[in-house]
Length: 135
Image (cartoon, rainbow, N blue to C red):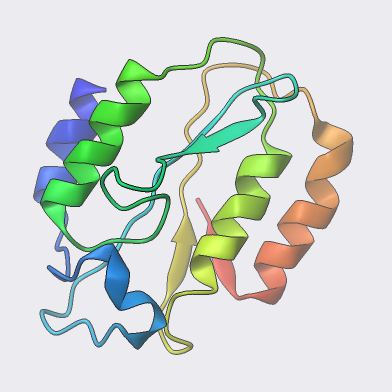
């Protein structure tokens, strides 16, 4: 988690908090980011930061919100297998609150073999349909 904390400090963020949603104008020419933890099995396939904490499971260009998100995910780490599809679906929902002209990139960081490969095709297809690039 320390590596992620250090990494987000280097990102060219917009400075906009999560409440701006799709009205983002990227005044600083930067980016917004969201954090989703995926694990599993059910009912913990994925978790987002809850309402009242950081970016509340939304995209944000605000460093303080991102740091609160990372802190929450560290304190609420779910150990388990690697189930990805639900997290991808939630990422798709996050990207719906990004302006149409903005580039959408998904970075997936995993520590194990993906366990729900059969469920990945529809989730990836939905992201592709939104124009999301996967790294």
